Image (cartoon, rainbow, N blue to C red; front, side, top):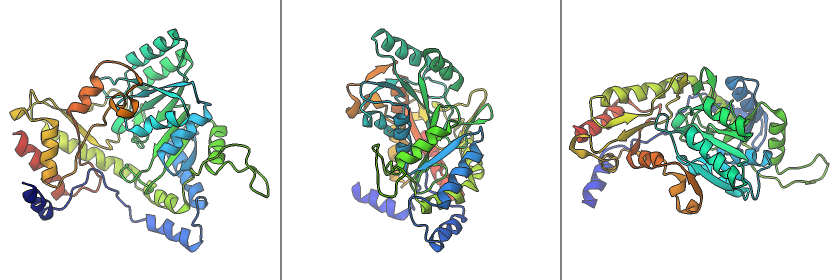
Length: 388
């Protein structure tokens, strides 16, 4: 069996979940960085990339480029003075980078279940969590809301709850660049927001991120902290603990080339999503994330839910994943909820089992904007053959 799997893998080229998709223009900016010897964690392309992002997001935001989305989120928590003894509410169904920076600061994560519509944080259980913690004398200091797989969360409801209880909102838009909520770009709703440009994101800088806010003082301080918090002096003077979190001029050059095709990438990912939806609509037991009124998702990843009680032959998520793996096709389970992770086993959790079931039944399908027609047909035929 092992030998047959290895032989199959050798025969078929790998189909990736979401591989980088270059525009061809990135090399112009990278070459300029080399030609001008700006091979450093600062430089004109860092400034230019920040301006490109601010102009794209609009809403009079300011942007600071960082070497990862995680770094940007860590800086956001620092800027809001979150530290030891504080509590921060976070969506449970997310990547660990949404929660880890809370622990960096010595604060305590409080996890909240998803709602069934968008799979994002449940406003109902969010308010329950805040009220219950207030009763215990521990009002949460911030909420980290996540736009899962590019799908906007129920922003209006969440912001009303945050305002009611005077809790800071950090918007984790790491997966959601190009998505909108009532025509307003995600990443502009939180007091502070973060973006990610990891290699599998809708656009990439190889590795990178950004911190976003309408409050320029936040961004100025974030840049200061991200460059080792060096004070204005002819020598190296430090009055604060700093971090090596700035983006390099070379990586920023890649980002500038990627920004030129961002809207095209969103269009291509949405087309892939609707091709999957059209293909699988006749198979019982398969459902998708749904856009509600006013929501526009970049469809960073197309994700399906498989109800094995309804699918033909009672196919489960794991059976489909293994079948695709056998065909050298990468797919991935939905994020495992944070409250189920061993590292957060003692964390408080508010909700029921929505996110647990989404994890149990959810599968991310190959969604890269550079997936070829032949590769898409290969994925499709494998799903159909198993689920028919």
